[in-house]
Image 1 (tube, helix red, strand yellow):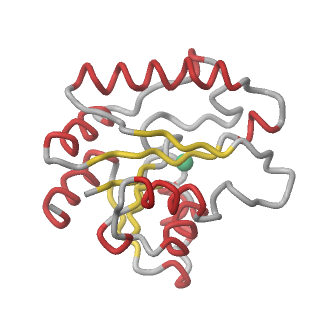
Image 2 (tube, rainbow, N blue to C red):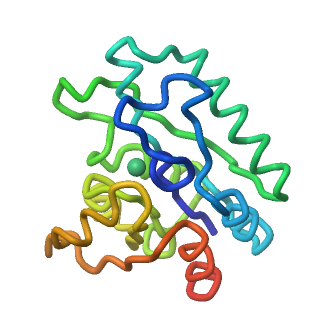
Image 3 (cartoon, rainbow, N blue to C red):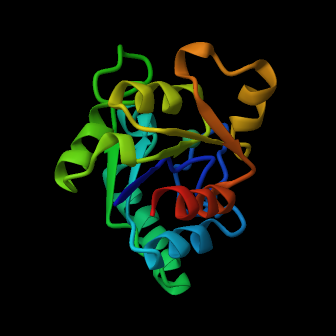
Length: 181
Ligand SMILES: [Mg+2]
């Protein structure tokens, strides 16, 4: 069983300027515990993240690797494991091909882990996450962390329904353990 996670606003705090250095990568409380809960329940975890800062020249792939090294170590220390990170480096100034709302990263992850889309929930905080999950055929979970609270308040478009809204990744993990194991 596979669980797909967005990164910014779900695992770590979203920042308006983008997480372009390690100091800007701040974990959301209990997010690594949530991943550990899923790992220990037998789920594989893949992160699918847009990193348009690379395409804009604000973030180097090396620095992204350093940031992800830190994330992996934090998850390991809590007793969990992120099995793979997929990222889209294209700038948000160009029409999307790989980055969400394209389902490309999600489909790649499910092919690699031989996962059934209908049993592979995606946890994200933005409409583009919900759109990508919809297009990939994955159940959708929106966190109120990151931009999710604002999306919930504005009204989640019917086109991506049904969306299950939870407070944070920890609540998402509890729900997934209950409903998908
Ligand atoms: Mg996000």
